[in-house]
Amino acid sequence: LRQTRSRIAVPFAALQLQATFRSGNVGEVQRFKQESADFDQAYKKLLAAGIRAAAQTEADNERNDDDNAPQGHHDEGVSTNVSAANALNEKQEDVTGADEEDGDDEIDIALKALAPHLPAYSAELLEAAGEAIDEARKRELEEILAAGDMITLPVDIVNDEAEIRRRID
Image 1: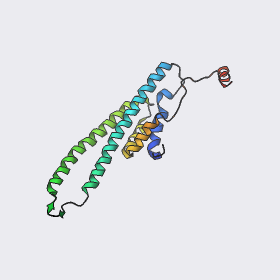
Image 2: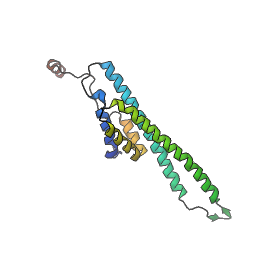
Image 3: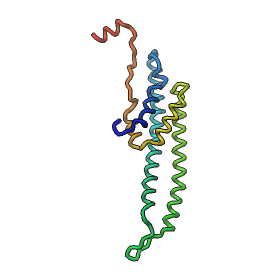
Image 4: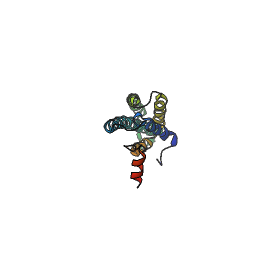
C-alpha cells in the first residue's frame, strides 16, 4: 500500500485480522472456506461502496472548484448567463446531496453486513473503518481493495510434531 496513508489502511487491516473465521484452528475446511468467502464478499462490498462515495466526493469537489471560477464576464459581446448557471448548480447540488446520502446509506449497510463476521466487540473496528472511508481518497480505497486480504493464512494448521518434521524434511 504505497499510496495509502496508514491511518486509512490500519482499520482495514484490523478488520481482516479480527475476522472470526481466522480466530481458531481450521477444523472443517469447507466451513472455513465458506466463512472466508462470506467475509470477503462483505468486505469487498464495503470497499466498493467507499470507492463510489469517494469518487462522488472527488467529482463534487472538482465541480465546486469549477463553480468558484470567475463568472459573468463579457468577452467580445458574449455574456454569461449567471442566473441560469446558478439555477443549474442548485439543481445539481440537490441531486448530489441525495447521491451522498445514498452513498452513506450504502456504506452503513455494508458495515452492518460485515458485523456478523467480526467478534462481539467489533463496533469500534467498524466505526474506525467508517471514518477511514469518510476520509479516504478513491485511489487509496482502490489500492486497499487490490491488496486483497493483506494477510496469508494456511488452510490447514499442523499441530502434530511428526507432521511438522516430515514437512520440513
